[in-house]
Length: 327
Image (cartoon, rainbow, N blue to C red):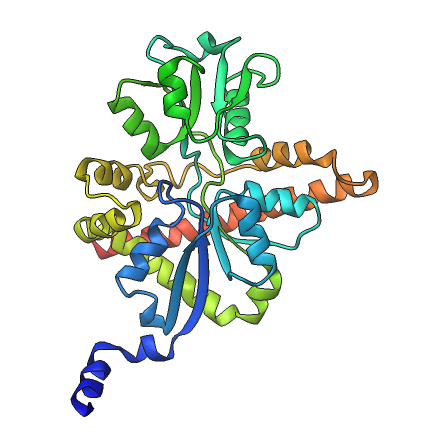
């Protein structure tokens, strides 16, 4: 028995034994939201700072926001739409960082569609109304000069967007970068688009938790920063960990996910998100707020996004100066 106890002590590090813990929820295994956090966790980078990180899958933005507000999780990793919607209705949330500063979505169409103008009057599929896929459709088509309410028909098709495209039930949809690369491989067309400034995968918490666990949150950010460095400098192990997260051994798919991750975007310093994406989303949800709160709510959301844009630039500059200096 004594021998087993001694062996256990060698296997379990002091950081694991005594680490403060953060519970971190994420949106999906197919997106970029959890990649850096998962890689940092698997590489033991949080433990270096005496922090234990438990990563929990929660599908659906409203469920994740509820978990945050109820204290069931400490941080949430996903696109900002659910948090912005909740803030528009009075919830107290705060963004710690945005993991990308350009849109991580593409317009994917049937093969015969060669230009966005050909989608005028056509059906564009989304997962559900009120979700990130609807926001992405509205934002993308607005940037490309089409009115989503007048020029296209938005159709809710659930998760069966590939099947709907194949059957011709819809002519286009919006997919994450990794998904669109796979779609192109299988014969669908990915329309050429400019790099659009947008807050992608955000890290969200509550102001109360950020105050109560400020030291733990700071250690999480340090571990995350180390995770970015590790991700960019150790491709083999990063791909190994990504395969675990994606639940696949398909090397091609893992490579696609690695290459399409926003940490590789070449224009990270030049592209700083504005607040038009957040503002347009806030406008859509103003109708459900009392009239005396509409302007105030919208202004607070947009101000927050502007603050995050400035912080984001400083953050990414620090990351990449350090990463490049280590190469």
